[in-house]
Amino acid sequence: NLVSWNSMLAAFAQQGHPAALWLFSHMLLAGISPDAITLTSLLATCARHPALLKTGCSLYAAMRHGTDFAVPVSTQHCGCIVDLLARSGYLGYAERFITSMMPCAPDDIVWMSLVGACRNYGDWERGRRAAQRVMELNPAYVGAYILMSNMYAAQGRWDDAAGVRELMARRGLAKEAGWSSIEVRNKVHVFTAKDCSHPKSEAIYAELHRLALLLKDAGYVPNTSLVLQDVEEELKEQLLFCHSEKLAIAFGVVSSTKPRSTLRIIKNLRMCGDCHNAFKLLSSILEREIVVRDTKRFHHFLHGRCHCGDYW
Image (spheres, helix red, strand yellow):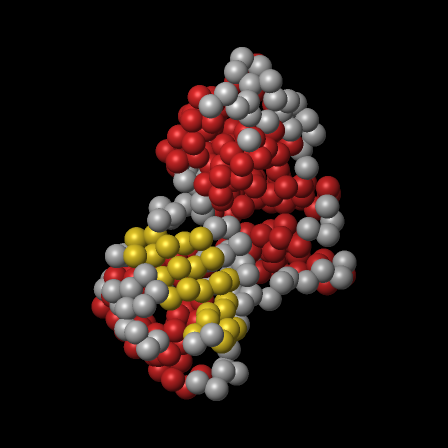
């Protein structure tokens, strides 16, 4: 039935797997008509895959004109299109779509899709405008403040970044603390950035140092632009290597009983680009699979690549 098809489509959509489109074609052949949830999953799949821009736009056009699907366009569908355009680098089109082409009023989530893409592409002014709209619609949306502060910091506008943080404090808002966990011998171990509380902390940092040397020998260059603090380059590199997911993987390596067993890590926030690049190399250096589940998706690192295609 439709619920079963939608469940499978949603699973593919979460991973941005193009097989969702193949599954959808079989659903239609089976005589099952799509509903709003079906098309949300399809558009979300397109938004998570760089090669599906035209497909996503065609699906949306079919919905708008009612040529193939008798499904009304909702805010969720429009949000997927904004995400699709923005992730593909069409930030101007995405903003114009929000302001003048949506058949329904944009909500904070729609605007937030644009904010995130502007951060990734360095379009600071457009990102600032979008973040302000998010704050107007939802003054308690912590992510908008964080991204605006980060965008100011990326430009070296430290006073403006501090001003945003002060505004958060006045409104009683706080950033969620990041952590990563890994299960070893049926016990879950949780790490935060710069964590020294673990009983094996000395061995973990020794292993982290060893991995850092192996990474640099393999051509890894720390992306210090992601450290949004006004500190020296050397300290920025140290801060990157103390991210919670790197501590978790170091612990996993020193604690593994099987040298090439899969390392599985859970992170409560989005995985940063530097850790993503490091983990790709580590999967090749250590000759083992690394699986990370962050707030966006699952990342499967193997043989120096991630199945997300660096698109998350």
